Image 1 (cartoon, rainbow, N blue to C red):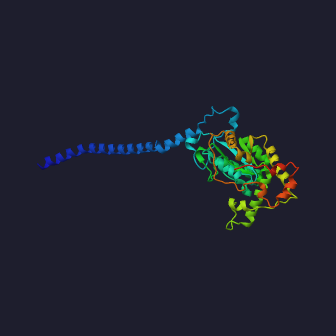
Image 2 (image 1 turned 120 degrees about the vertical axis):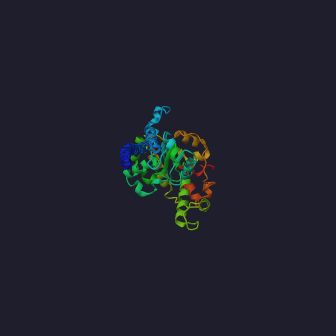
Length: 334
């Protein structure tokens, strides 16, 4: 009996060994399978797929078949570094700059443009001297603006149809006009010149603003407040009046001449005030979808000029019989 038990135990032992080996092999195969599957899933994850798809989409050229041949140098598809234009990546963008002089209505004009849902005009970006210290500094700043990487309260970002800013003639334009004009031609920038016909009115506004800046009558701050400035009646230097008017007039003429080889338009403040169809001309110039443009800004000086100058009789005598005599009566309503 004892021997039979031992033989039974000896013969049963080898039968369990192949089963155990099979289980180990199956377990090892399952572990390897799970590991391989996990690697495959990582390689085809939604995040990676989206990334590859995005690259393909943005690398595709935008269809410009509906744009006229002459217009193509002025149509751009910026790829900003600070954000993605996403579904608007192939919306064409026009570049522009508003050239003007202080107290010529440029602030009001810019708010009108910015009321358009597809326009971003970024204010006086060259007010800081370091940005206009050289042609190189200017072009670097222009590159940021036109690549939609200049962020301001006016930025519409993704779906811009036109992007630009306003640029005073005394902010490096006249000194570096050759380099700027060349940049405009190479990059298809639209130049909008905004001036006042009545330079006498502009002079009164300049003097009122200077008074506000130096005296700060509104709670010790310089705000160019309409109510405060409207009450101020400056005394104009009659001796230098003609030469100052000539200087401003010639400055505007030279600026237009410097940029005559670029795509440009000349707009006068009085024309925009008296005829809002001028705004349609500006929108057509920038190839924008037409919109009614609005502004909350109000006019500072209203009424006849004789009520806004201390020495009106003296000014009248100086201007009568000159090319500037029309300024005495040239008026408008807003």
